[in-house]
Image (tube, rainbow, N blue to C red):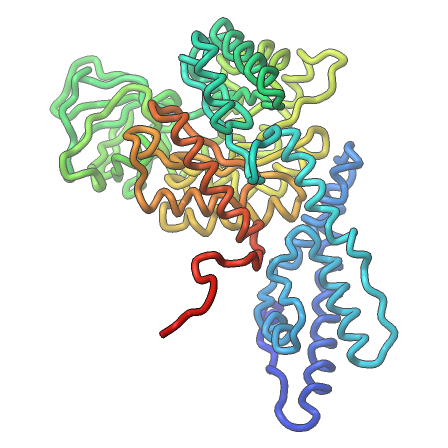
Length: 509
């Protein structure tokens, strides 16, 4: 029997006169075994991290994260079932305080067995959530009205030229603002920041500015011929390391990281433009490969410059900070409240951006870092990324679901975003739920039913990010209404038993 099975395949409580006593004894033994194994494993995990931690305030979160990771190596469903039958906590909502929750359940079992019992102080169980709440305000500002989840807005070009427009966004309920450093430049960014600061001061609000460093996103760099035809399923095109000397029978594209062309293999899946085009490698060429379109809308889709391209099966081992990023860092270090780290994948990526920011910060304290998780490698490395960043800077995480869906697969995305939420709660750090939230409403003025449900799910994060769109003010207000309603019923994984208002009074047949 494996270790995982040994912690899950346990008999349920017995029946008969001594059922209760027997069940308590069995559960107490099983819980003691679990705690011993988890403590041993978590000690080993934390030992690898401990020397790196320079921020004392981060240490409890790192210790809890190590304990949580150790516990989640095992299947605890058998233990949960036995605890639930006894009317005890099933541990399903204890991410931020798992060790203390196990101690509390253990003490209860001791008390039921007639043994001396000592329970943790209730304030100890709340400490992780208090830290998350404090950092939520640091990263995402305050909030108007009766809701907890903040709203982040990506600033459009109008934000640099129209102060009244920014006032409108703050009045609608925006709590923080994102400037995408992949677009515009320091002059425009400075105007945006000035308008945001002025709007926040006028509203007597705190609205932090996130400057999102673009990072090494792979994009289409050239298309041959420039006006390539619309692609349908079964059509083919070439992906090359360099533009062809002469147009060929098949259209050709090059990408911003041409070295990837040499790593393509037959059958490898490629996604373009956030999954609007899916293709697979069908033939290798001397300087690239031929790809066949496998996924596209019935009306087809054109290849366009600057659109992102994802290679889920390839871990892109490329420099994290591009030349453009390095040129932008002096402005970001001087002006951003929060620094967004796009396409961060490895601990050395985090170390690199921290070192680069230090060069321009002087005596000022380290800026909070928002780690954008958008590749499969970043998901696998998430605990190490959190510890590397959080050991030296305040840290939060963004679930960047656009690229992440392409990298881990749309079928896996729902599971991945849940796991990221749990892991970040265990580390006592806040999370942003991002990418295409209420996108139809933003662009057309009318939401789809599916995206309303998605926005409601995002309420469990500390912040929800909205992209640019002509209906941005209306979307902020709509989202704020959803969040106010959902806050009555849900806090992270915990359902709040607030009064239901749809069935008040007698219910006649």
